[in-house]
Amino acid sequence: MGDQETGDLARVRIRVKGRGALPSMYLQPRSQPKKRRIWSWFLSVVIALSLAWYLYSKQMAILESVRGPLPTPTPTEISAAEYLAVGDRLFEEGRFDEALSAYRRATELDPMQASAYARRGRILALRHAGEEAVRLARRAVEIDAESAENQAILGMVLDWNGRPTEAVNACTKAIQLDPDLALGYAYLAEALGDEGRVAEGYEIARKAMQLDDQNVFVRRNLGYIYELMGRYQDAIREFEGALEVNPNMAFVHLDLGRNYRALGKLQEATEHFRQATELDPQDPQGHDQLGWTYMAQGLYEAAIEELQKALQVDPNFGTAYGHLGVAYYVQRNYEEAIHHLEKAIALGARSEEYYYELGFSYAYIGQCDKAIPWFEQALLLYPDSQMAKQGLDSCQKGK
Image 1 (cartoon, one colour):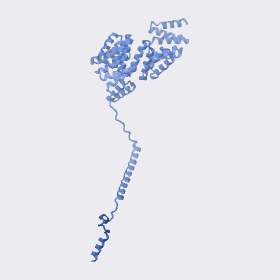
Image 2 (tube, helix red, strand yellow):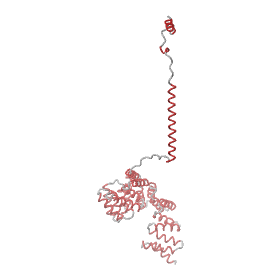
Image 3 (cartoon, one colour):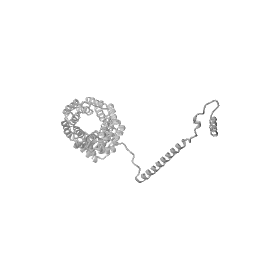
Image 4 (cartoon, one colour):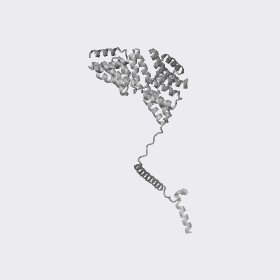
């Protein structure tokens, strides 16, 4: 009975007055919570990772102390063909210095990249960097003599370096390789004009226009033929047409300035020469021609400033030395005139004016013994020079 009583008593104790049995959850013994075990595991993982990172860092520090730091990863360089395309784009944008760098890099990556040599040479020719331009253009033809473009550019470079007969031969070869190459006809026309065959040059320039009147060199070279014919208004029209094709070509602004100056329109000439210096400040011709146009307007100080800029860009640009010498001569600064005129002649610049003004500069500072050889040399090169004759007579009578 004792056991039964105990069971009955237990059942009674878990009753609540007037209510049923309590839920079973209150009948289960309490279990130990899991949170503490999870936190302990997480903390162990963090400590382990921190220790691993510390050991890795120490290992890398030891390695760097032995072999130095690892190089910083750099982007993969583009190919030679891609540099050529970049150079072409930069040339079209009138960014000649950057184009030269791109073409140069193309040939460094691929020494057989003929087009890059040719197009780099063309830019240098436009800046009158003669011998280097010829070397590069010849290298392009050595690599690929069957390229009509390479032959045409060689012709252009030779012509701009004062060798029109050789230029005609190269351009003729280009046309034989590709009878439809407008560029070949355009460069041939220019070379024929410089060789004195202006009428032939005109016909060839018209042929180039028929093939491609949207090529800046085609339009420009027809304008140049008109200039040689003394048809300055027609020349200006074609030069302006070339700028409509591509407004970024500094050398076309030089052409326009030169023709406006021939017409006596000095303000228009000045503006185009100024634009040339803005588009391509590293071309000494822009500064030189702007300075020479200031001279024609009596703006001697401005002229000297621009001519000095030309020499800063290219210390071996003989024409700028000659023009600067004339500017000093006009200002009666004969010592500076002598220095710059002699430098111009030494660099290959040729002008009747340079010789007789050198003679007069020496005569005006009382050194006729040094003046006479310059007057004599002027007459040797220019037998009809009246100024040289007057200077020579004056010095000889004063002896």
